[in-house]
Image 1 (cartoon, rainbow over the protein chains, first blue to last red):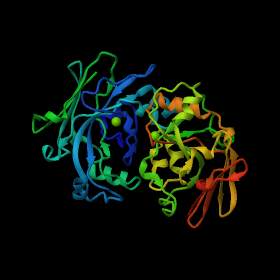
Image 2 (spheres, helix red, strand yellow):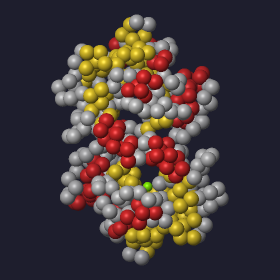
Image 3 (cartoon, rainbow over the protein chains, first blue to last red):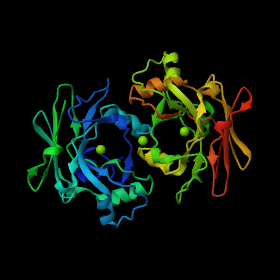
Image 4 (cartoon, helix red, strand yellow):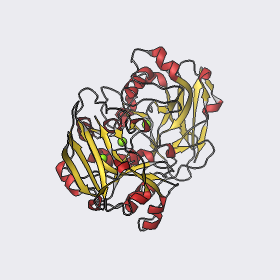
Length: 207
Length: 207
Ligand SMILES: [Mg+2]
Ligand SMILES: [Mg+2]
Ligand SMILES: [Mg+2]
């Protein structure tokens, strides 16, 4: 599951409205691209955008979580990942205009490059991590997760009131500003810093 | 995966436009309601609609299927199911208006009641089956799958050019006309006839 529009500056850059509550959508398991598993495939005619996001790996079944239950939310998280929510922006724009689902725009094969598993202990506070993404070594996204509009307990509460979360589910928590286009040959690198130190497991490098 | 707008009369009843190509969306595994597993849960404030659909259970990995490859498409199907694509219609209407994803409207827990597995041999031609749904014994949907706008090979081709289909994936092929609302206490029954005979495995009965 992926949370949409969760950083104010990113909402502004796409001329979207800030949601009154978190909304979310699904990416299929087939969109996952494991570390070193090769390039993101750009379908013909697609304007391909990156969105770096902190991801939660769930450790237990969660249903109807109370939004105030921060302890319960954090307890339900087993580990973290860094993920890039690749988006066919032109396909998404058309879907938005026509009121159609986002599944195609978000769901192509390889549209979810992920890092290795980040042990929970490496991120003492998931609302205080610095996530970044560069293209050809030029920094494009670099912000703290403290800028999230809806914090993780609220996200997990809203999702789990619709869909039961299961062990192993991956939740992407939204992207900060700086999204943009990549073309063939471009190299995306992404990572996460906690207390000023790069987390080795969070590194992504993908064409 | 679920195909949207695949029967002309159903498109007309919801005042939608006929798509030039199949479009599709995802329901999460958590939305599946197995036979006899109890009622569909209606979330508060939700206008709950049924959509009976023939479903395909995939038997192998399918990627970039040729739309003309009818043999390949049928070979990739392992079995069938009958499914009811439950939809929070008011939530979906709002998502359409705002250009938001359909995942919430389509994805609540219990929003995909399914029948038992129907062996492939019971449906010699999936474009020639009669599917029906009644509410409190009043027939509401009853049409032949021959009315599909996009036939199954085309559906599997379009999906598999976006997302690799895997063994065990369930593909819902769209609903005919007659969708409508159900409330608490209503009993939905659904089934399928082939050559005039009810298929035992296809029966669904759910509150
Ligand atoms: Mg969607
Ligand atoms: Mg995103
Ligand atoms: Mg449907």
